[in-house]
Length: 578
Image 1: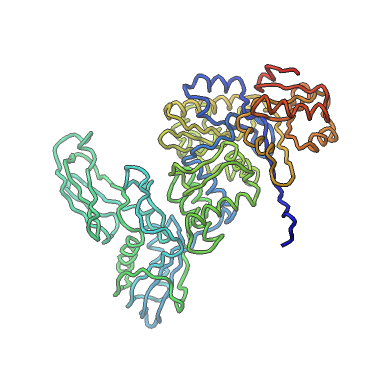
Image 2: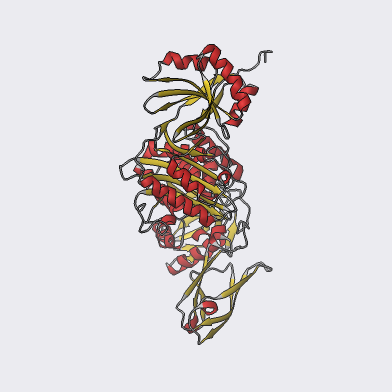
């Protein structure tokens, strides 16, 4: 290579209204009981509009919880399309003659998270349609498409066996959930589907007590000290209770699939002589048929509305394999989500760490502005079809009850996210006057999730009645070489700035020549439109930095420029003249 430095183009994205709240929202924030530093808000007209209604700590990194699913979901839609169907392939290794498969039946999973016992009749019918009535070999499972280990649960919290902690697998079945049916009146404990991969021990004691409190639900313990896990049910339970279903993460999904498929085949008239094996599809295997899931649109809708962690994990991993080849890993999945969103223009910069794609993480990070950018891009591209993937206020999903009987019902489409000390929401709100707004409210605070939820509810209700149009916010792209020290400082200040330089106020929109003078000096700028057109340079985090920039502005752009502090919805206050 020559001694010349390779030219690098950096985009310095500086957006105004880092702290700008309408009076109504400011009052709600001030009376919420939550420190302002713990709250991030970004609200604007939905889509390509640059009218910003409210912004507070919009570029501050936050723990996203489940709102991060929006990124995994949207990346999957962009890459695969709404109508894409997840495959599961069936192969034979052997010869089929006179109804007998002399060899193995091989099943390769590609991570379809929806495959369940409801699909078994169709799978058996397709196997029989190939003329197979007997399998002399084994049922072989290929789960190599994902490289995710063999952990059953994430261990994120103490609810070890809860379905939301289920870990992904390329050969997923019944979402890794084992369902145990308990009928106290008959002192009966059974598995909902045949599954020899775990044992049941019934030590329950049916009692003549009302079906409430400690008598209303069976207690259990899972012993994994042996090769085959044992579920021990114990303690008293009321005989007056109806059938109870325990849905827990107990065993491996590929083992459950094997036992369920073998049982369904035998009941359907297909004998299976062999047993269970884990192996990759051999080179000499032939495709028997491919089973396809329901369309991706239904899968991502359940991911969003029900906040299904397992589905979101699988979406990210599948994208990793599609983009960078199998086996997929967390690293490939993260890279795929970010690359897809960036390459399509949905990510414009800002702190982001996707982690596992579902939000069950303390290391995931996102900003309110970044999430709003993705939501805006999705709405601009897909409109209502995308919006309806999210939970609809008072109608379905995680906000069905939250907004039932309120003015928000049928006027908000949102994705929620909740962890301890984390309460987030992001999506769209339609006001009474018909305007649609992108709304993101992230709260990471010790003040209490109930306070955060109340603040979010109040802001969303306020937006339903909002009649304004927001302020126009321009984002300037500064094209240069590597960022200078001054530019790096300006980038950092964009999250906490208070000082701006007002260059001038015009009755008519300034000419392009005027803005070109500002751009030539590589200064970030914006324009406020009220009854006049006001142009501002900035923001700057300190008065000292604003003073330095003011010298440049007065020398090359406007002699009468001055510094203003704290831009609010009521206009500019605390003018500082020099």
